[in-house]
Amino acid sequence: MKVFHTVSGLRDDLNKERQQGLRVGFVPTMGNLHDGHLALIKQARQSNDVVVCSIFVNALQFGLNEDWDKYPRTYQNDCDKLRAAGCDYLFHPDDIEMYPNGLDTQSRVICPTMTDVLCGASRPGHFEGVTTVVSKLFNIVQPDEAIFGIKDYQQLAVIRRMVQDLCMPVLISSAPIHRETDGLAMSSRNRYITAEERPLVTVLKDSLEWMAGEIQSGSRDFSGLEEAAKARIIAAGFKIDYVTACNSKTLDLAAHDDMEITVLGAMFTDAARLIDNLSITL
Ligand code: PAF
Image (cartoon, rainbow, N blue to C red; front, side, top):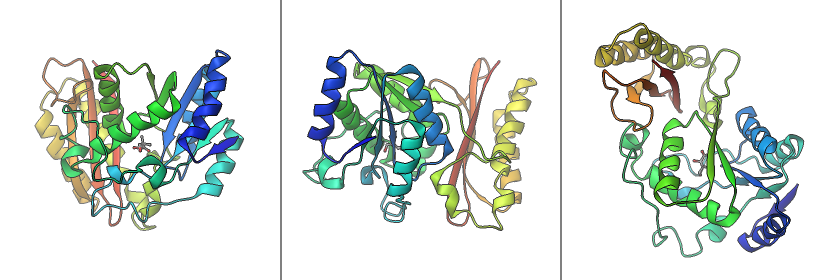
């Protein structure tokens, strides 16, 4: 695996690959890689000749009170995992390389739809940070295909919309949520869960599954289902950010005649914010 810390270095090498007609697949990450990330690399491997991964903990998408400074940075370990997974290129820029003019004056990409609800409501500016860095990374890597996990469902929807709106020549593919054996969605932030909380946190997934099951069985009392799911999560000892049923494409609140519905939730443990989701077709 070739490692680059500069835009120009990576570009030079990838240009040579493209000149040979090779197809480039890309997996952007913030590092601290787990099996979910490695599944994205493997998926990229299947449909591309060259696989590029980036590791960059993007300050622009973290709020002032969020965990940018303590976000786990496990570079050597990540490199070993990427090599074993068959990644060809790693792009690992520092903050100066990505934001040479500083964060405050950085030009930004704003997706005005779907970004102020759900995770965007409690994390103002988060998606602007994501769309800005992903656009930059797309411009740097110029991939044919980029792969994102469905765990960050809203992020995936926003990026799809951005790519469509801005005519970016990148195929956006998704990969299923990778789960621990008890069903907890894998996340770099799971390391903040305490031993006492750990057996209980599957309540988020269980509650979303219950809601999805009720909707599949014909219930359209979305707000009643949301309240019941929230009560279950609160009873397990966690604080709710949101639990809701949405139109899978627009992320508008689910309507009675929607055929594609996604139930999404976010809850707080003592030190972590966990998200999960489940999509159903009626
Ligand atoms: O999903 C992530 O890890 C990040 O939001 C991403 C897409 C790498 C942008 O920083």
